[in-house]
Length: 423
Ligand code: FAD
Image (tube, rainbow, N blue to C red; front, top):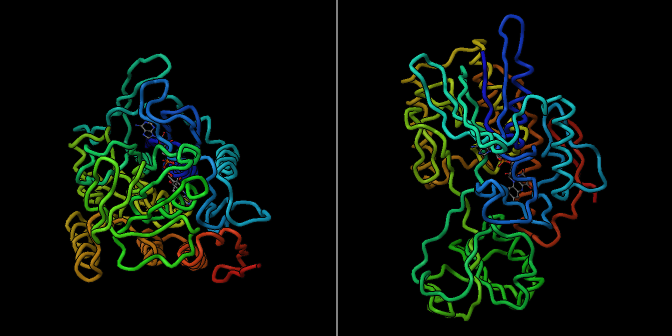
């Protein structure tokens, strides 16, 4: 079986490694990775520039200079390659990138990756194989390759979702999305409205407050976020309208502003995927997929890494193992109809019972433990240790309680169930 892995970020690396482990004499698996940049690490590769790269492609990474992780390293490693002991739990982006490079070298994955190869088309063939159209960015030559199966690992933090604010064409100041944020200096002495209070909005409101004159964190959460922000940060409801030099909020108040800073998240995007694959994206819901991973209409296509608010690297590893159990015929997939029924039941549960919106279809958070167990059960795999979910949830709560200080916390995992807080 020839498998193509698209992308060499943390998901693609896990996919390559698990393909290697699944390769046996009885069921040979040959894997090729395609990566459009010249590095592994995906979004953890800091690129000072914004806009287009030197090959004319949009810059993929959304990483900013000062970033420290919002999860402790104890839950950020891979099951068979944890992040080594360190005097802190929340690492700088450079340490995560170094870790990913160490993972890549330890498992000898680099030689399997064709760097500076952009995947331009992924299309199913009548033979049940997949054709990949590729562009070698160094020579600009195009070529095609056929594979039996494809793992899509292209990330989902690169295509900005912009809020369509009334008056956005009237506003005379600067408007930018967090994808293009690198450093706080351009915000010096500015009055900034930050749109959105997800992890990026909260972190970046705090970061730019060190330079900006005034930061207005605008969000539609029902309650004020309780974390203690510096004095020059205020919280407001949604923006109703932008005017030439100001923002009017839904409570009727108006503020003079210089910059609108969109921390409004990202769109799932698979620009290379042929509609013939039978997968569509509707308001950030990628479907129809079996357990957020395997394409129901063409099960030799899989997506690694769609769920968010998860223990990302461990989940990528688990999802890759899950897929390979079916692809190597160690486990049998349910029928198409059974997979579709399960999907409909999950939609009812999320949308009707829990009141989620479509864009939250792949959101895990408190549901992540059950999700990991379901993957493990369906493919007869070792489940992820419950301590990961516990610690992830504790860290997320601490983030909301005390954004300014929670990264000073230190943890140690004791066993598969328990952890201690060291300070
Ligand atoms: P990516 O890292 O985006 O990698 C995708 C790769 O695919 C890239 O290398 C890209 O070049 C390549 N690619 C894309 N399209 C093509 C193509 N057509 N052809 C060839 N190659 C292609 N997670 C945490 O767990 N903890 C954190 O603290 C954390 N902080 C974050 C902070 C920021 C600012 C952002 C943006 C994300 C953060 N995340 C964090 C989430 C992070 O995205 C995941 O941890 C993880 O790195 C995603 O890995 P990935 O491999 O799925 O995607």
